[in-house]
Length: 327
Image (cartoon, rainbow, N blue to C red; front, side, top):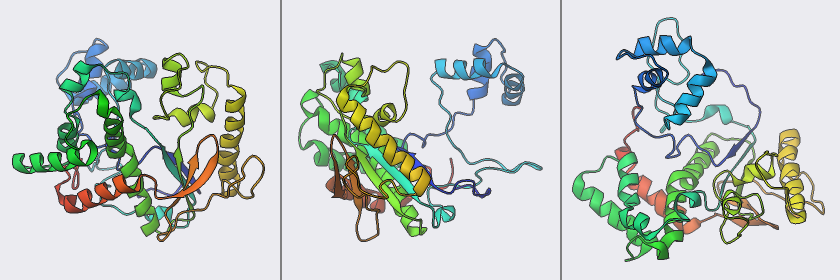
């Protein structure tokens, strides 16, 4: 997205997108002041706060930001003399010319947002107004229009049900689709338009001993593959349980596909006993994906009905996105 020089020859994008709802927030211009104040320096001037933080211990600044619940998002930078900006215009409509001919591996986890809703009580669901909150975050609707769009979305995902534990999985699907899965698909479409190299798309669904909600629920495997679960089968983390024999096979499979892509620009350059399914890249006519589970399988258009809903929703409301021109 940046006009700066191209520094990668291939990329792996896991559960991420520059269009994801996780990065589309109105920037908090007072963050430097808030961090400086927590560290003991009080000021109402942002420049003074930045100067103080620049001289502070970087680890303390990072830890303080985490303690305050601050996450850092991309934004359009102002122009300053002698400073080369990294991003100077909105990326929502921008093309991605630097991906031309670049191999890409990109995908998502089947129930990305499960941790946000899985172990919640009745009181949580009674207070939940997730559809309104999410639509208001991204779109600039008038009150009447917002109600119409909320109703359409709620009927699609929940029918006539009120939000409660009975529709928990539909809530998880809505949140996962809105926050990660459809933004990933929109990014893929941009890459196709920019004539990227082979695009290898995946949906990660494996439920093993290292999945976050499995660990948190003492090994109970009644849940799913949620956000970041794939990382625990690619990298060893000190707080994760030792892998089961089944997990060991899966870890070998995952790390082989990922390193194959890094070495050969193809996660399955040849089929083997470990990788018996050839991973076919996406084309504009064949939206293929690898379903990564205990067994590998090739599919077409993951969550196609839900993705079609959001395709139409964004097409209808494209120019009502809050951040279409600035962030």
